[in-house]
Image 1 (tube, one colour):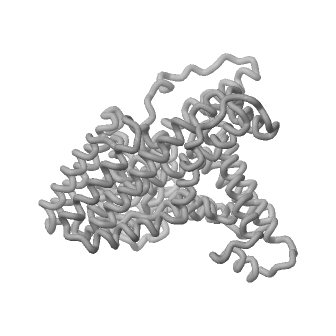
Image 2: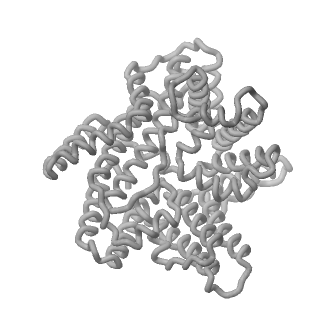
Image 3: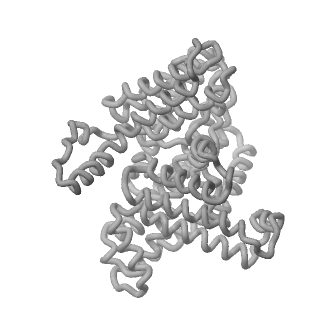
Length: 482
């Protein structure tokens, strides 16, 4: 169920109304929330509805065995089995065809016959499985690290994994970010003005900017790059970089806004990523919940920065390759992860060089401050690296990605041009990185000065204006496919 539909608006009004009616009755409110979560997930397809309770059962059972009052058992084995089952279910549905094709290619090299797909190749992809699987793994690992913590009940785990504002595309919630809020009566600490500001921000990013950049700037070039000029190709690369930002951060703003209206404060997932000065800072600002998940549950367990040198490089490369593979079972995602891994390694090597500035000077250089030539060059190189890496993320296959890069390297290729409206759209997407928080603050100040009927009227007017500026139909969010 797409957030930007009348169907979802009606669903959310029912959920919001039910929350208000049950306010102060915590147990009933939690049961109502769980019912709403499952109804929302079922709307995306009844076929995979049993999978979510099944994953929840694995997570709950593993957590129970890791709790302090569990029977004596090897905790590392329990951890490995619980995490392994979650990853196996994710791999079965997300990477089955990828691994089957890989095995068949190897068999073909050995001149053996291929393996049949055993009827699984045509299964639809379970929506949200990448996100709620990672949330389940986070719960298991946190329970392992904190054995004195009381294990949660099955219904609490199911509510945590199925929470409808985040189940489809995040943010990836940690147990400590969700359960303390669930223990309160949901709806007890609403912030309607902040929720409205976030929803308006998300609608503008998705409905207006992302939709235009997708349909009018990026789509044609990525479908048939040989038909477009080098200039149009470059603008499409910029356009897609801003499209995926507006699309995904727009979804996040909507999720955070819906959560605030329901009385939940969800973690920030974006923080002006295209203003960063190096690739490490980019990953502290882009898809923050995934970045920190990979850091805490993959990079650090691998050894993190310990040992330095080759060990650090290996850990970075493995983390980013698996981060790329998380997005999809395609070579282009692995290349995208590889490029970011190599960029992070290069940054660490650069910082280790005995150059003229000290470590203190390095920190000063990366701190917010006035624009200097060095800072501009750092931003320029980082931004363009990220944009070029997105080519592999967006292209349908490696051949298309390489053809797009070829038309940029061999400049002056003839072909179809680009719409002039692409330039202000891209500029607006970049401007939101800097001005977005100020615009939201201004909206909140205006709302605070108005009586509540005027607040409702202003929010409704701006919502209608944004929807009017967008196309008749809104495409699904990009990260729904992951």
